[in-house]
Image: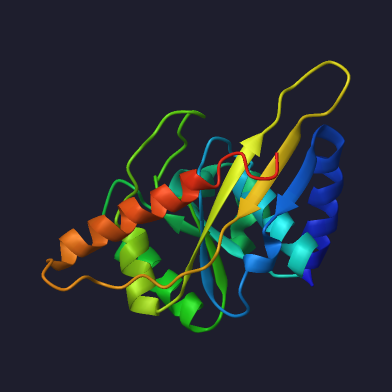
Length: 199
């Protein structure tokens, strides 16, 4: 119920400032999944979560840097939907909590690059997302957010493009770290391949 209340409140607020178009929502699987996207704005996790609930009535949580837990009001507002991560350390508890939630059938939004990256710039994914997927046996769903051109007469349009889900596998002949690196690189390729779809 709390998620639904937040959905309508935040949808109204976001709707004042931009329009959200969604493509590929049919690719969102039932059951657990790791939704992995590019990250250029603080609003990205909220926009993806809104798109998922609006199109498929699917609830989700997202991983966020622990610094946000110290922001007055904001931390209280987002706490029910966030797994806070200490990016400066190997946050085993956050990873374990995420794996446990996925094993219970939840959907988790993760930004593999680990931080915001300016639009048009490329950055390597962290390998943690590969570890989480392998350990939880939850499929990865690539998603790309594209912001339309801004002008004085129309609100900007955000396009959320979901790709097909897939379950990565560790490759024989490679070490665990090499396999995770390859999975993470492949994931970023799939995310970037969605750029511009439906715009």
